[in-house]
Length: 266
Length: 349
Image (tube, rainbow over all chains, first blue to last red):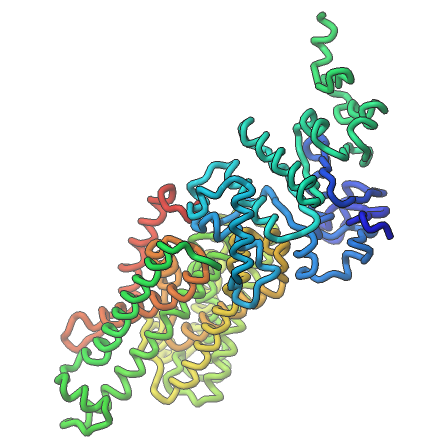
């Protein structure tokens, strides 16, 4: 077992159980996640990105196949054990308007605190430094309700940091954010991967930025999952498979997308 | 969890105010009633002395004291049930009576009473009898919650779920009415009286059993503070924080079932305390952190229940107002205020 490998999935089949029927979204997925890498999961809407992320985070079970976490089957872990290995930032709407920034980040310490969730001095200083590292120190005592979408996202990222997990999974962390917040958060996640040596797996629609910042790119289309470094995927002309049949083409020189029709005009 | 310092002192201030109110209202409940008893006589009786009238002693020790203690316990029981349901269903309008849990336990009571051949109302039952009634009530409450849970797996809209709860409440109410058809005239009469709600339904001999059941439920709710906080983030986040969601959900529903069933069995279907008190507490504390909110909700629940009980003797001519005529007067305006100010109140976002 390679020590740098966090998670290995083999012949994974993901989807939903519906009234006894299996609703398969993808099958025969094989991949692994290594320490200290930033991985971007890209794919068109409705292709099953969130389902894949939730399956890896053990928030829904795979229909078949195996996921190994640190050399052990995922099913053999308790919720408590996994909560110290995988932290998530989701798109779920939380009901936390009436909590302060500090209180929400402190929730991330729940896997470590005792029965009543009382924080030790170390817990408190961890919470403080996590809030600092996402640049929210001046808003520590603000209500979540008073924050912008980007700031809330930063708070949730800080929550995932104090969970002290080697793997952080984020479902569209930059969706609905303005350009400034988007760049800030992407940079933050990049630093988390490379400076704190955590594995960061995120889904995004911003493929151009994902190409520039990611160590690994996962392309999920209805035909399956393709993984590789951005350079390899571009060199092998894989990026175009993302939007097959659409009026978009990937320019391999500038690493940007443009419209096919415009190409014909000029 | 840590509270910011300013909020901490604010919390302490409100806890102090509520505690003073609680003691004052409790004493009012013992010293005031539909029969005029001089204060020094009451004091004398409470200290174990003799009263100048034997009936006064009986009134204080067998009626007012048990009633005050019942109110003291029912308030937190209902309020905490409401709070847990609001957090669990992520719905600010959830409460045992709106979601039909109260009528579910009422239905359980009705069925057991009919089987036992008695009339509705537990005032004159032996211990084994009302243990059976209580179990019936708990089963009824859990049944309604199981139905709600079933619907909540595929009804994602919380308003729709609320309306389903209201409909289940109507269904069980009409089932109770149908059961009444088979009951004696006396049974129907006592059912109607039960439906008006009163904190006077627990006799001093039943009080130990009633109190310990409620206390078990309240302690259980305190033990659920940590997972309740995690649940504010939603079920998936809570799972990711190491919470065994199925276990926690069952514990929440069991606790709510026990508390609601116990109160409903003895005191009737009391509305609005479970709905309004968590909101009053959140508004006062300015926080939805259960670490402070849940104990504070208990305190406020006691205060409100004692106040309502006091308001029942307001006519001061020997007659008593039904409890369910008082609680909406207090609760409904609070809910309307909360709904109108939804955008301004931070805990909605």
